[in-house]
Length: 333
Image (cartoon, helix red, strand yellow):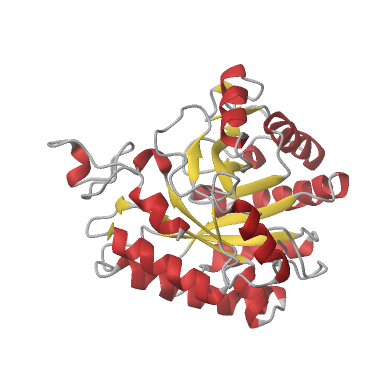
């Protein structure tokens, strides 16, 4: 399924929204409907999952793509590693990826994240960085790369430029490589650093399939409806993407993805509910957003009574009342 991509230098299409997983009982008919345009929704579901450990809720909602979190540098080297510790060629990770793919889903390798060192900050040249990214993609058997750039890494202009140059080199070697950038957002849209990263991608002619905005962690002044904030953030970013990439209304929506942190967030007062998830899904379908995602499948369960997730964001549960996998089902629509 092709949707409008973001890149100003692209031919206007990408495979940012893969075909539905074979896990869905109606996969064959759904694929046929999408091919002839009879299905009104082009929005796929692609949650973030641990690359090293399975969660019982991984397949909730029958994702079409899994975002594998995260590949970063091993120490201060230019060597890619899962979470900075597990070798790219780890047999455990390979087995996990095979399991995720066995019912038809694809995997997208996510580089970066909030912890550790993104490879662009440790590799000394664009060619070495491209090789590091390529090694991780090959190990996962993936032609989809997500670059989750946030915190100090986003403000580091040298690594931003080096990353853009390396991705452009990699796409010359791999013309089918789909690239997404995952960036922090506010209800007012992307900040100046996020926009500068996209301008850098344009400068080096990176072909960007999607810009995935993290609709979460806005700050303590944003303590109302998280679903509304997600929609407001998306609308503001839509205007920005039209300008940065010279896109139409439909092209900008089709070149966007939305990722929410389910349940209790990292900022006091922010709780993303199941109702919010349903609202975001409905909005994404209405506008033709490429894909929706969440952080993360291993949090898509109710916390045990008395656990820390009730007041602070927990790593392994949502902190809200829910059935296991309920957020995945809501985001899948």
